Length: 290
Ligand code: UTP
Image 1: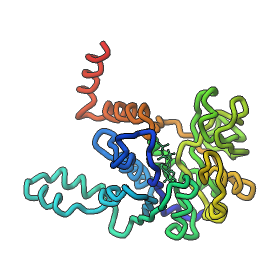
Image 2: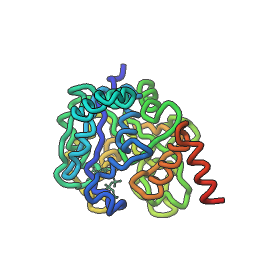
Image 3: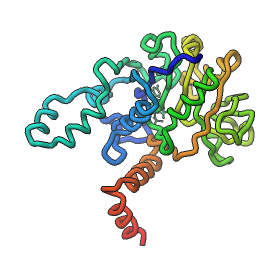
């Protein structure tokens, strides 16, 4: 019997330097994909997978994320008075239950491994999900839902992966697997940004994880890795010597919204799927490119 995955961690303390100047005063996680902040899309994915508690690791300039996941009393009241029932219902639907969110501060952006470690007391002694809020996974029943299914079958630790072109593997965290064609496969090795020509496969770590709480003991060492940052991958490599890790291949579309091109592509893809926007946007694009 595996322990239920109840909590999800969202590290939102990064500086978003690739998106300056937009991210000078606005967290990159609050930039919108169509009309929803990026982080809301990722929280939606976690809710759809049955997550009950949402843990945000924030930093300075990120208070607006906390406000976004709180009730906006004056706004609700105004919508009510103006008879905007549909908008009010949509806001209510998106709001996590009272007490279902926790916020902690990373204090300094020392790396993803450090951000995850900051959630240790809130997560406690249970396996948890980790979702990088700038990585959108779109399609199917949802990436985390697929991973939880795999976790319930196999237990252990899980990482979502997806193929990248062979000549780009040096830009990513890459895993080696027993069977690259399988939906779920045992991981045989991991490497952060392998030198060109040395990658064990073309499967990159795409920003969704299910981790056992033993990861926190390794993160507590706070060893610096690539780029002088405390890297999550380094602790996962150490944990993999003791515990099973599985790769869950995600077959939908993945957008890195922390990069300008990923952000633009995600906006177009999500808008094209909307009944209220798709036809009009398609016509606009045809006009611009025709
Ligand atoms: P990224 O490296 O993509 O985010 O980290 P970044 O550092 O904000 O972006 P750039 O490269 O400067 O543009 C992946 C995720 O981990 C979080 C980020 O907020 C992002 O969601 N993160 C990263 C932290 O919470 N703390 C950190 O110290 C580093």
